[in-house]
Image (cartoon, rainbow, N blue to C red; front, side, top):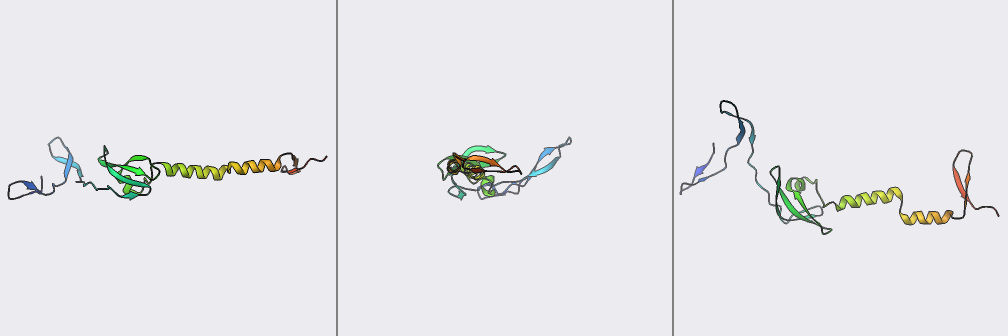
Length: 140
């Protein structure tokens, strides 16, 4: 079933009606209707750090995928649905940067550790009755 019209040459045009996917034993159609989808042209648009270059031939779950170039120089193939939804903003470099930043904050920077080690070098650990300690120069 379609809601198409014919032009002057007799060719059909228009949008087909939604069709269902299954038939029962009597041949009657039932189930969820399939929606007609239109592909959105994302070429040239920027999403976060990604710039869309062209459409990729890869398709998953009937979603168009796009070849994108990240600001760091890498390329990535990303679903248009994830781009528009804001779920994918980079090739993965942003996640690596955030993880590295968190690790530096958590474990301190190596230069800070070196300075701390140099400050206590040659000092003796002195324990207090409560179990805590401090560094003191050894008595000569």
